[in-house]
Each structure stands twice: as C-alpha cells, then as structure tokens.
Length: 505
Image (cartoon, rainbow, N blue to C red; front, side):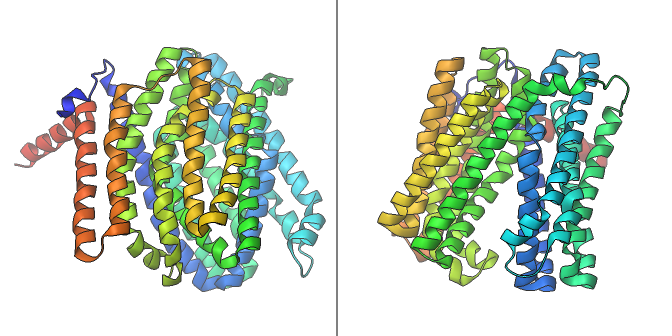
C-alpha cells in the first residue's frame, strides 16, 4: 500500500507543523530534564544517603499534598479561560481576567500556608514516629504559598501561548534544583532539606513571575470584588483537584494492597516499572497541557474545529511515541540494570506489557482534554473517578492470577476501557469522531509494537537484537515518512540547511 493513500491533505497544513514543533520542543526539554534529574539524584543520594533521601521525599510529599488540596486547581482551570479570551483577541478582558487569576492564586497561597502551619503538630505526629517536627512544617509553609503563585502565573503563560517562555522555565527549574541543592546538601546534609525545598519553590516562582509579569504587569487598581468573578474557573479547578485526589488515592490503595499481599519488594518493582514507562512516554505527552490544551480551549465553541484539533494531536502523538515505545520494549533488559540495579530485572516483563498502555494513552489523552476544554467539570470528575476504580479493581484481579505481570496486563485493560468510555462520551456529547488517518496509523504502529513484544517472548541472543532492531527501524521509518508528508517543518529544515551550506560555501 502506498502511504500517500493514508495521508489526508489538510488545508491548514501549518497546524501539523505547529503540533510537531512544540511536541518536539517540550519532549526534548522533558528528556533533558530527565537526564539532569538523574545526575542530581545520583549526587544527592551520595550526599544524603537513603535516610536523607527518604526524609526529603517525605517533606516533599506533604508539601505537594497540601498544595494540591488548597490550590483549587487554578493552575489548570485558569488556562481554559485565559486561552478563550486570548483567541478572541480581547486584550482588555484578558488584562482583567489576569487580575482575577492572580487574586485567586494569592488567596490559595495564603490558605495553603495557613493550613501547613496549623496542621504542623498533626502532620508531625502522623508522619513521624520519632521527634517533634512541627517547626519543620511551619518553615515549609512558604513553599506551599510560592507553589500556588507559580501555578497561577504558569496558567497565564499557557493561556497566552507563551510556549518559548514555558520551555525556558521548565529547563531552568531543573538546572536551579541542581545548583541550589548540591551545595547546600554538601555543607549542611539533612539540615539543608527544608531550606532547599523553600529555595527551589522561590526560584521557580521568581523565574515564572519574571516571564509572566513582563507579559502582563501587575495591576492593583480595580481589584475590589474581583474574587466573585472567578467562580466558574474555581468550579472546574475543584473538579480537577478532586480527580487528582481520586488518582492519588487509587495509587495509594494499589501500593498498600501489593505490600500486604506481596511485600515491599513487589511494591518497589511495580513502582519502578510504572515510573519508567510513564516517564519515558511523558517526553511526548508533556506538550499536551502546555501547548495542546490552550489551543483546544481556544476552539472549544466550534465542535468541528475541536474534533480536527484532537485528531491532529492524536496523529502526531502516535507517530512520535510509537517508535520510542518499540525501542523501550526492546531495550528494557539493558536499561533496567543501568538505571536501577540487576535485582530490578523481575519487573521487565511487567513493564514490557505496560508499554501498550502508552499507545492507548496517546489516543485517549487528547480526546479526554475535550471534556476539560468544554468545562464539563462533573463529567471529568466521573470519568477520572471511574478510571481510578477500574485500575484498582483490575490490578487486584491481575495480581491474584498472574502476579506482577498481571499488574501490567491490568493497566492495559484499564486504558482500553477508559478509551471506550471517553470516546463514547465525547461522541455523544460533542459529536467527536475519529478519522481514517488515525485508524490507519494505529493499525500500522501497534502491530509493529506487538511484533517487538513477541520477540521478547520467543527470541533471544543475536536473533532478538537483529529482528528487534529491524522492526524498530520500520516503525521509525513509517513515522518519519508520514510526518514528512503531513508537515512543512521538514521542508523548512532542509531549506534552512541548504541556505546555510551555500552561505558557508
């Protein structure tokens, strides 16, 4: 079959270039962040040791939980409203709504700080079995407030499509974490954990506010009664927070079940496989919230344009993530000892099966954002809640029958059911329909992934690496060819290189 038959020409070809460009940019930034994070983790682990790393993780988890519980989801829900105004080109209303976002961000910052300080004794009693750590939690309160401010300013930048600024901030956040944490831990050890958390929150807040305030300077006049204007944003944000709590609760139940039924080793293996698979695919999915969601929100009133935007994002996501997933499945036996240790190898079969959930995620995630773009907070909450319940139930069932491998199968099954639910709802509610190019790309790439997986079961040695590499190259070639046909980026790049070559000559 000729690939030209697969490719449907689009009058707005530049939009494919945009999706590819910014998915590549944020995916590349995410990849660089992962590399820098690995370096930082290695250095910090050597300075603090397991106990210090555990203490830092404990403090961070508490700060993140309080932040999530008190920020009302402003960092996400505000994006939709700013994006709609940005696409309408109404500068006066944008300026006014920015004041609304900042007022709510300040309110949630004060709420979060107050809760952190008041709950200090309770957090100390239930988090630690030794000593009084109330003062630590009081000193961590500014970090909670700064995270709320950062969330609001980030939402403004996302809604206004300041993608270059967001990419710079993402990269800066990881570099600053390295620069701040290593010297402090070197000189102060565990005593530096609380200062590092607060200083990192401050650095990120300053970097984000610098870009946001350059775009929309701070205006204090006309702020009276402004909080009442953001209730729709808050309603959607609260739904987002509750959905996040459902997800966190599901993960906690899953790990508790695996610990009780199995042991801590099983929990560790499951967690390592889950994080490795999700983090790797996240290089592609990282652009969803930063670039895709604001664009989708901008066309949410037009069902046809919204469907076109969703299908275009699915095509690009599938084409980019499929070769990566095939390579991941092939290389997992090598990567696991390299990134972890050889005693983590038992999680490889689970992780290889779990890779297929990321193919499904590449399709489901762009569709599910339609619900948020339309502001259907109750529907979003019900869909996310049902996914969490399904995952817990299926993982319990999978582990009972097939052990650790069964958890990977259960996650795949969860995402299959989630795709069915999300597609059915968006089809009935918004008239969304998948397109032939999406189906054909999936029909090519997913079977190639299946072939790689079968090789992991049936082949070994030279045959495994030879055939596996060949299949991965076929997947990569298919993606490059179709993206070449879909996007003008390839032509622009070759013309730029050609002009530079002639200039040098």
